[in-house]
Image: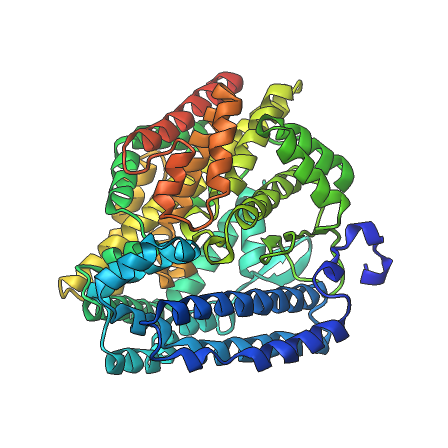
Length: 591
């Protein structure tokens, strides 16, 4: 479908950002000309000058982000339009110029004495910047001299090489095997592999699995070297910035208590019996003499029809999220009626789905809607992101409006959990109820158990290098195999192919990122169940979290919604939710 064939009501309203491309171009030139905050260098000890700098910086960033969002939206509408590709490139140049211009701010403030910085935190004029200043104070033990910081900055491109090299291996140079599919020989790309793994044809899954992993194994020496280099880079930076470990540095960056990471690993470890039971159940349901990892994503419940057109699906989501109250439902309706969402799949449009936005504007959502059950969940998920952005931007000054990555998946997953529980309660068809419970189990398994296993793998790999132990393909595969047996149990075959799975995980090149998926779903399960149990009071607490932005550390913000990740209780509750859902599923399946 061409974009000009799509009805206006199903296209996002970019005019709310800029009236036209010409308007964008004029504002771009004006904003680039306004970059010039280096004049404040050396003056940050004067609180009047500092406040002026902060406010001008906010104004500049608000304008820059608005420009960037528009350029990104237009480019994603149709990536073949070179004008918008050029817009995107211009945005990159603008931000590079800005970064160089303001590079003095944090180092200069870090050199100020704590008494002065504390006085700024206590000054109501600096309310919008108190958390930012507090973080600078906390970071003082990890600040380097200006000369060293400049040197690290110069090494930035070198440090990014490991991620870029893996990306090239994984996407460009990867020897994608061919496979016969629907009577044609096709490349077994990452996307095709995923589709086959979720299909019913077991022989085809086996063939794809063996060929796919054979391709990764053929590159295992190069991937091992690349990953080892990336971990050594992490260790170097942790030591350089005076952290006790790579994990400590990663947690500090997001202002997350170490107890969160430790509680996650401890709770999942002590509750793995439910996961082992799930794997054994899958083996029974699929009637396999031997269960293999290529069976883990195949449907256990089939024959479910749930097709809704977009408008009907959107109304269904609004109904499903009724526990969040009328204000939330009204905002969802606004998103639909005021064209926050780009709905249809069209030629040249970016694939997938996302939510984005900027301060002073409503959020925007990209969809490529198809009438499937998963797409209904996608609407709920992306609108969860959007309304998190909406509440934080409405409640916070610009400097505190952007929430941290640590909590980025919480609101979206709360929506998914609430919608699923609504659908299960409404389902009259037993097969649909089985399917939904299976969907929920697989969501928790993939987002909580699997990501925690990944987190444990990268923690062990980094610890080995911190102890001056080299990483080899043998010890990495051995580590991954050991963890696989621990997490999945004895009901599944642990072959050599799956011990090499670590070679195909791009997230490992952004160390200590994956655990946030697990803590995100744990938080969401706790919040959603509390809302369903306690009603309005829990919703009010949840809205405090949604409105928090980055006004405090993310763990403290979650406490506003009743989730304390420094305690064991929320983790254990989420694990019980998995166990309870599994028991209900087993009863319906008669096992």
